[in-house]
Structure formats: structure tokens, C-alpha cells
Image 1 (cartoon, helix red, strand yellow):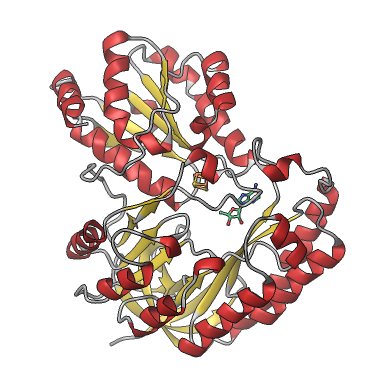
Image 2 (tube, rainbow, N blue to C red):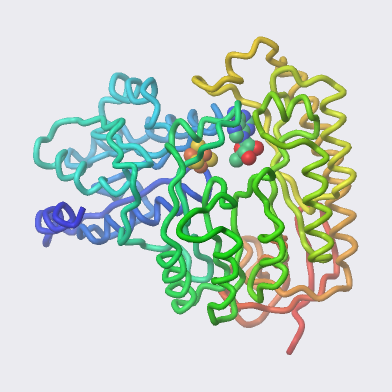
Length: 451
Ligand code: 5AD
Ligand code: SF4
């Protein structure tokens, strides 16, 4: 990697070149984009958020649902006219979409202004691939070339100073029957825990107040210690910061992890635990390896150990074969658990996954009707939970100013709830205590408490 970074740096010397990385998808992709920007900066590019002024554009794509892929393709399509204006512009596409042969072929054949593609698991080869395009001036589509190991020391240009992502593992071994991730991000591999601890110390020393450990299934971390042990080790890191992690798989949440969280001085009182469905039949068809009783038992243990813990989840509606009774079973869990927030998705068939080949696909109208119902049930619960916070003081990490009002700031509570409040002073990137005065289903309003 380094020799290519140096080679491009020399070419870019005195050229005033700019690079823009456009990101779609999840936090893992946001974290990968921070590495792409880090490598671009090391190669001598000034990093910009404006594609129109860039000499190098990299589009980091997502493939989780059809809609995500269509959005990325349409954005790539819009860059055609930029290439017409700037003959030197180089366009690269990476991310989960480009780990699929049929999408790479589509980019090759129908998007002639795309110069190169590479997969998420070959992220650190970006400088090498770019160098090759610059040298040969030929298009290159790299697929199936990942090394299968983790390269440490890739430069990172972080977008925010108060919040930081720290990847602890890559890939996925679970093969949930609806999910494309194991096919596009390869098998699980964990970083050695010492690298994780060093990176957390580094971001905290640089001012991070909210640190999220990232992996497709953090509970199966195997970087020289278990995930529970990693949380224990990280609770010894000094500094006033919140430690979060995502995503957890219910089949792997251990008692040791719950105990480590409860003891930790910096683990946020928040657990994101994707349920996907409340029906045992559907969970089985999804290849999730747990049932509703097991899920509910974890919730019980979490609440017994940390009574104030906020819970959030992911739900898929309209999985093949989902009956009205299966869907009701999902609503039943929503009502029993009373999540603080849910992320809900209409099932989207992904080519190459077992669920896409299942015969009993659900018609779109039924999927949308179920989604509306799910949202209505959850809105009511979220509003009730938020209303119960009125009068309480919450510690929020201030994101920055709200768009509409110069003196209104927005921050996130420990549970991840959006809190609006007025302040004369700019408190961005700092913790503030806000007394809640009004609740909505998706946000809270409050008054800044003077210390
Ligand atoms: N269709 C809809 N939602 C999906 N998810 C994953 N794959 C699909 C799919 N094919 C959802 C799951 C996962 C979240 C990140 O995206 O709920 O937890
Ligand atoms: Fe993230 Fe999955 Fe989308 Fe890839 S496919 S960007 S891992 S959500």
C-alpha cells in the first residue's frame, strides 16, 4: 500500500488535486470511507465533499436492499457530465455492490466513465488500483482479489471529532437467508485486541466522546480475547466518553458480555439487538438460530443487569412465507419489549441469497400495509417512552446547531435519542445536561441545565 501511496503522492505534487468520497449504506461503510479519505489525503489529494470540484471521485456503495443499489447507480450516473467537463477526472466505485459480478459487469458495460472498481475486502488496495489506472489509463474491474487478512495502519481521515467509529472485525459467517453481506464482505476476521485498544485510546485522546465498535456480529469477536473481555479491557481506558457497539446477534450475546457492560464505567446504557421477526417459523426460515423465547430471555437479562438500558432493534416485514399470524407475533414482541426505537425494513430479495429463491414471496401491497401497521404500533410505544422522560435530566452529546434555528442545538442522549434545546454558547462536541420539557415519537425537546 505505502509504495503506491508514495508513487501517487509524487504525481500529485504541485497539481492541487482534490478527491471526493461519496458514501451509501451503514456505519461500516462510513468507517471504510474514512479510510478511503485517509489514503486519498496521504496520496496528496485535498479531500472535498463536492464531487463537482474533484479530480478523483470514489463512490462507496451499499447492496443491502435493491433501493440502496439503485440510489448508488443513479448517483454514479450523475457523474457522467463531470467526466465530460474534466477529462482528467478518475471515477472509482467500491463497496458492497462491487463485490457482485453482475453489478460489476453492469458498471463495465453501461457506465463507461467508471474507471475502476474494487471490493470492500480489498479496501487497502485502493492506492494500488488507482496507481494502475493512472499508469495504464485503462479501466480495471477488480473482483475476487482480497487478501483475506486485515491490514493494520491504513490511514484514517475521520469526519467528526466527537464521534468515532472503530472497526473491530470484518465480514460475516452467519448467512441469514435474506442477507447479502456474507457474500460481499467475506468471512469473519477480527483485529487483534491490542490494535482496537490503541485506536480507542487514540480517538479519545483526540477528543472523541462517543466511540462505536463496529462489526457485523461483534459478539463473535475473536481477536485474542472474547468480546466481553474486550469490553472489560476498554472500560479501563481513561476519559469521559461513551462506548457503543454494533451489531449484535442474539444467538451470541453471552452472560459475560451483559456482566461486563453492567460493570463498565463507559459502556453506554444502550443495546441494539436485531430481532428481524417475532415468529419462530420465520426466524427458522431466516436461519437466525434463535427463537422468540431466547430473544426475550436476553432482554430480561439485560434489564435485570441494567434497569435503565435503552433497547433498539431491526425488523424485516414481508419475508417470504410471512403470514398474518407471523406478523402479529412480531407486533406482540414489540408490545412486550417496548423498544425505544426500531429500524424497520421491507424485505428486498437479494440475488444469490436463499430467500430470494423461496417461492412464497409476499406481494408488495401486503408488505407495505404491514410496514404501516408496524410503524403505527411502534410510534405509539416510542411516544409513550419519550413522554415518560419529560421532567427528567438527560446527558446529551451535542452534535451541533439545528438547521432551522440559529440558537437551537441537537444532541444525542445515552440511549441515542435526538434532543433539541436552546443555548447561547456553542456546545458542539461537548456533553450537556438537558431537562426534557416535551416529547415526540422521534425526538425530545428540553432546556439546558446550568451547572
Ligand atoms: N431486505 C430487507 N432488509 C434487510 N436487512 C438485511 N437484509 C435485508 C433484505 N434483504 C436488514 C436487517 C439488518 C439491517 C441492517 O438490514 O434488518 O439487520
Ligand atoms: Fe453495510 Fe451491509 Fe450495506 Fe454493505 S451491504 S454497506 S455491510 S449495510
